[in-house]
Image (cartoon, rainbow, N blue to C red; front, side, top):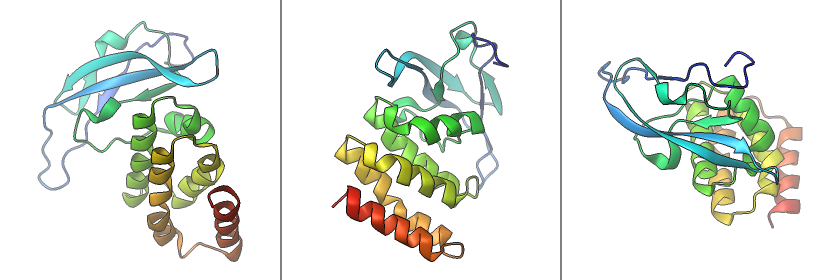
Length: 178
């Protein structure tokens, strides 16, 4: 959107299947999130999209108010691995617990782990998000989703973990979850 208050262009990028190199036809829902009067990120627009090529312009998004956050697989309508860009990751880092929709929050934790496993995001960054937001999570189901990724993160972090990291995880767990 280049600083605009309106969406100029919204493009979905599909990457080829790593096994056969094919691009397949998919149908998904793109959700546009905005802050409400209580400071929560809520869905105000859901745009159904069918895509099949490398890039798909979501024409019906053009001209809409620029959202705070965009999720390209709202309510898991498509079997895809969503990748968040830096702008979306910044929103997650500051506000994942403020996303009102519990299904989206649950999916975002899985997305973050998948990005770590695919070397698209450092495990330390996701560990920090968990430390910053798990204690603020109101849904036990979503909290469980966030904490279930910790063993995989620790596996990815293990060469870089210091005693301070372990102590911070232990202190957080003891003070916030038990």
